[in-house]
Image (cartoon, rainbow, N blue to C red):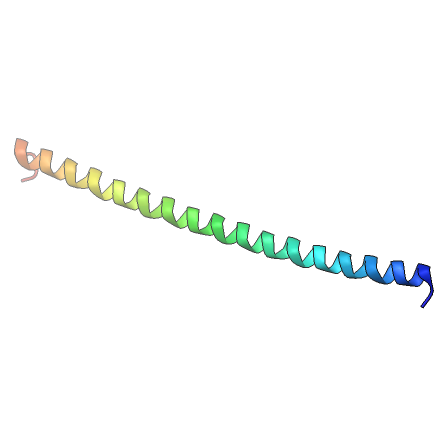
Length: 66
C-alpha cells in the first residue's frame, strides 16, 4: 500500500467513525426529545385533572353541581 492509499484508507475509517458517532448522538437527542415530550404530556394531563377537580369543588361548594 503506497502513501496515498494509506491516507485514503485512514480517511475512510475516520469518516465511518464520525458518521457512527453522529448517528449515536442523533439517537440520544431523539430519545431525550421523546422523553421531554412525554414528561410535558404527563404534566399537562395532571394539571388538567387538577383544574377539573378544582372546578368540581367550586361547583359543589356553590351548589351548581346538582
